[in-house]
Amino acid sequence: MNSSYYIGLMSGTSMDGIDAVLVNFDGDQPTLIESHTEALPLALLKSLQKLCLPGNDEINRLGHLDRSMGKLFAKATNALLAKTSIDKSQVIAIGSHGQTVRHMPNLEMGFTLQIGDPNTIAVETGINVIADFRRKDVALGGQGAPLVPAFHQHVFANPNHQRIILNIGGIANVTYLPGNTEEVTGFDTGPGNGLSDAWIQHQLGQPYDKDGEWAKSGTTDQKMLQHLLSHPYFALDAPKSTGRELFNQAWAEQQLSEFNDLSEADIQSTLLDLTCYSIANDALKLSENGELYVCGGGAYNCELMHRLRKLLPNYKVVTTADLGMDPQWVEGIAFAWLAMRHHLGLPGNLPAVTGASKEAVLGALYPAD
Image (cartoon, rainbow, N blue to C red; front, side):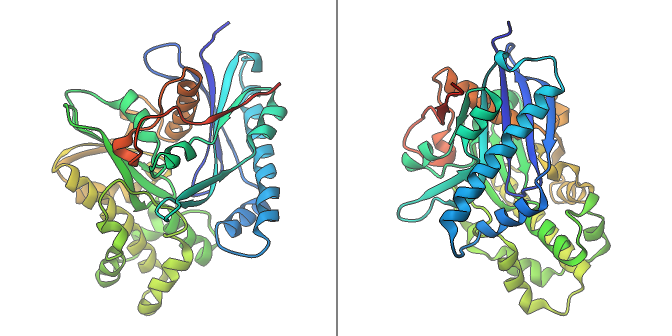
C-alpha cells in the first residue's frame, strides 16, 4: 500500500469553486495523481458572499453554511477519488483550507475564520481531515497568511535562481525566493481577480472576464488608477495580508463614484491595471529582475499576463507550468502538503512571511472514526 497519498481541498477568495487534488508525496517532489473542481451552487455562493459582509443573524447563517460547505468539500473529495483507482483507505489525510469568511489579523485581537466543518468532511468521506491551518499562526502573533510560501520554498526554490511565485486568486500574493542565503519573504500584494470578477458579474452577468478581453477593449483611466493605488494598504511593509474585508465590490463602487463619466469597459481595464501595477510595484521592490512564475486563476488571463510582462520587462514572466506544476492546482497541492507536514509533526509556516513569533505545526486533526 502506498503510504504517501494526501488530498488537498482549496476554496479561495474568488469563490469560483472547490479545487480537490490527490497528491503522492513519495518522491522528492509532489506528484499530482488526479484533480477535480466542484462548482459552488449559486444559492450557496450568494449566501457565502453575504456572510462575508456584516449583517443580521450571522451566527445562524454561519452555522448553516459551515455544515453546507463541509458537505460540499466531502462531495468534492468523493468525486475526486471516484476518478481514480485509489481507495479511501490509502489516503492518509485530507488537508482542507476551508472557505474564508473573515480575515482580520490586524485588530487588537486579530483573527481569521474559515468554514467548512471538518467533522462533516471526515464523516462523509471516511478519511481523517486536517484543517484550521491559519489560526495557530495568528495565535503566535502572525497574519495567518499567506501560508503557501513555505510550500513554494519547498518545491520551487533553486539556489541559482532569483524567483517570485505569484498566486493570483481573488487576492494576489507573492513569495520571494532569493536563491541565496537571504530569507524567503512573502505577502499579499492586494486585489487579484476579485474586483474585476465582481465588476463584470455586476455589469454583464458573466462570472469572470475570459482572457481579459473586456478589459482589453477598454482604456485605463490614469487618474482613477492612481487614486486606487493611493490606498494605504499598498504602502504597508510586510508582513501583511488582506481579503474581501478590504478590497470588495462595495469599496470599488465607493471609489468609482468620483469617476462616473468612465465607460464600463474603461473601468474594467483600470481595475485590471490596479492588480497588475500593485503586483509589479511590489515585485520591483523585491528585485529589479528575475523570474516570475504565476499560478492561480490569473495565470489564464492573457491580458493580465501581457500587462505584467510590459510592466516587468527585466523579468521572465511565465506560469508555474514551466516549473512542472499546473498553475490551477498549486494551492490545492499546497494544502495537501500542509496536511502531510502536520501528520509528520513538521512546521508549516514561515515566521518571516507571516510575522508569527516562531515556526509551528499548523492545523488540527479531525479523525474519521
